[in-house]
Image (tube, rainbow, N blue to C red; front, side, top):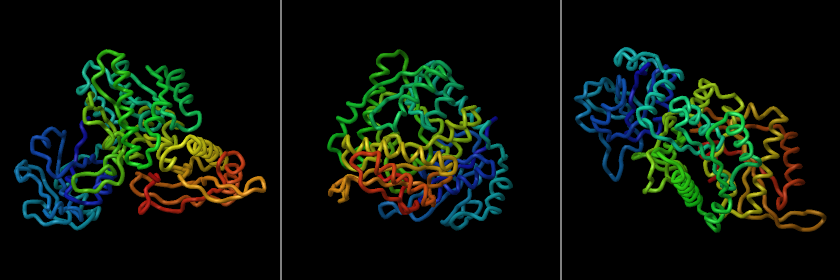
Length: 430
């Protein structure tokens, strides 16, 4: 079933995501597109019922206010202007509109139907994937995380054996994670899975690299190179599947918004990419990805698995990666996850992890002065990863985690708890 769509054009608002979510909560599909979309590009979108011009504080770029293509005013779509005046639109509203006014525009003015749900979304994406891919093959990076797992399930539903999954062990995985991926996807789900051991390759490329953006780009670029090598061993690979979701895109920057951080599957892609991308989740928020996974029949343990960044522990071993700190963050993270599960927090807290900075502090071990690293624990709750609050973990739980880390993890003499919400902090440290 084709889903009606309200298109949001980004004219500098910092609240595009919130507006899209408001509309989707009305069970009407909404997508965000750049302000300079052309009538021909708009025409390619399916079932557009109306357009919202979403202006805001970033509307002035290089001293000039961004504008839409004037030809869009003659395409016949109802328009709603937010935060800037124009006589050619149905109405104008400040900031995020009142829900009653938004309903009036969406349902009365645009005559949109409330048919946005995961079943319909999956049907639409399956059709789009089949149209895009045809009889070719898709190569998918399967980390075993939520996003890649849901993409895999969606691609399997759409194209079956045309999907080739590749799991790359880059040495930046959580403890026993690669082994778990192979067990679940290859042995249990019988997926067409290729396992690549690239630990030394990645760590060699990252040696001495401290800048977080450079690390992300190196990891992203090297991932693509690995896929290209695997694709050359196969026949008919023309597409690269990715678990890109909307927060990845918005945080990597738009034409009117500054970059928060690049994502390996957005900002880290090389210019000479030889694959066409297949990104069926790129308009979904994290909670919607999980709902999609459940609708596809994935087990809840997989759908609600801890979020894990594409660069893995590479952005949790802060600064230039060293093997001793990498092992410290891997072991500390494993302890944290074990203790959160024992305390029942694994089902309550959206994301929790450990990081190890690239500096040392003085301490005492075995009755002698030592100079070792610290572990910082972070636990946050969020709906869509665009903002986050801190989980107030019980002191007894934190105490047990601290005792175990200080006792069981080498080269660590201090444990800290991060109390920073997003914003101003981001979820990850790098």
